[in-house]
Amino acid sequence: MSFLNKDSKAAEEPAADVATGARLIPRITIQAFCEHSQTAELIESATHDRRMSKVALTTHNGGLDGAIETYKSNPTPNLIMVETSLPYAEVPAALGRLAEVCDATTRLIVLGHTNDVVLYRELIRSGVSEYVVLPATAHEIVTAITDLFAAEGAAPIGRTIGFVSAKGGAGSSTVAHNVAWAISQNLRQDVLILDMDLAFGTAGLNFNQDPPHGLADAIGASQKMDHVMLDRLMSKAANHVNLLTAPVLLDRTYDHEERTFEQVVEISQKTTPVVILDIPHTWDAWVRYTLSTVDEVVIVAEPDLANLRNAKNLADAFKALRPAEAEPLLVINKIGVPRRPEISASEFASSVECKLLGQIPFDAAIFGTAANSKINDVYRAVALHITGRNALEVASKPGSLKLPDLFKRKRA
Ligand SMILES: Nc1ncnc2c1ncn2[C@@H]1O[C@H](COP(=O)(O)OP(=O)(O)OP(=O)(O)O)[C@@H](O)[C@H]1O
Ligand SMILES: [Mg+2]
Image 1 (tube, rainbow, N blue to C red):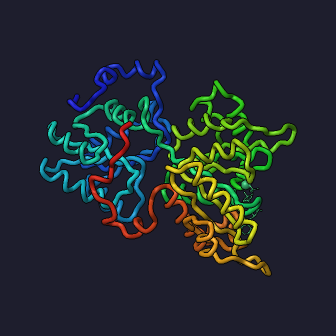
Image 2 (tube, rainbow, N blue to C red):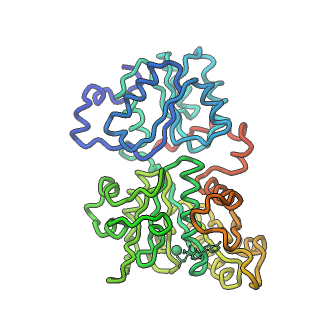
Image 3 (tube, rainbow, N blue to C red):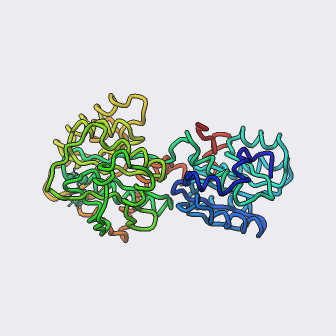
């Protein structure tokens, strides 16, 4: 046992926290780069821990150098674990090189062979999330991950992104679903789509799913709602894509309270790295409230006058509602409808005073046309931006990020 393990009691009593309903680690992706096969085995054995049941973990060879090589050309996961047996003095510089090729949202656990408190402090100060001294037990590894991602009061891991159309039918659902798909494919991040258009939503259709349960059950469960129930209600649409679908039944009306979705969104954020809110084109209290709480708002608009007016109103409303939050973002959809007078995308964006994230031609957004690489590039760029990865920075890897900015997390 190392001096670094803050949870030594739990380490001695693995059964105890299972009995008390240990918190599950959210649906994160973890990649571990090991130097020794025993370390890889140790990490793989950690996946048998119940707390790791939702985690997607892979182990790789090559230690720090392997990680640096890999992330020069690949997106980084939620958590990197890296084993190093470098001499003490060389560790910070090597981690600096890793930092240069990593996204700012990624966290890092270092597995080292030096039991030294000064090194530990230096690493933590530079933004490393945890340092575990080897040999360690699988339980210690899992506990280190749990402390980071599932501890009481840990910052929610999920980034919430609301998509709304400037005018009904402008394509916000289509864009939201395609962007969710792009996130799952390009970033290998788990995405949960909440189809909040309970009467007419299309997430089920677009992903070819018709599950018996979904978002209506989640909001109906109120007090009983927790991450276990969320798991039961969501349906898996593809690798890394989960849905809470809309019932699309008109046997009742859907008159939500202002905070109807608050709890579901909060629980979703605790379990999934990216939560996409597909919001219908209305301006009800719940829409305004829900969009005031998300990390990013994306307005999808067609390039005509009515959309321009509405997009401007929406953008102004969001800026006023969320003065301290990220400004709304804009995607122009259905460019080039035959015989329609059109406002240019750049003119549209500057009138609305929003950052233009992407432009999608008419007749090219139908979900599932994965072969259309040009459109996929647009969705990918939107995906990178809204998940906090600046497309330009990623393209110009390495060298875009520097320690200690990297690996710096809110240690809530
Ligand atoms: N670029 C595009 N080219 C052609 N058709 C498109 C394009 N984008 C979306 N569509 C189609 O437009 C219709 C409306 O799209 P969608 O349901 O995504 O709109 P919406 O903005 O979510 O509507 P609402 O605001 O009512 O929720 C769908 O039939 C969709 O397939
Ligand atoms: Mg829609």
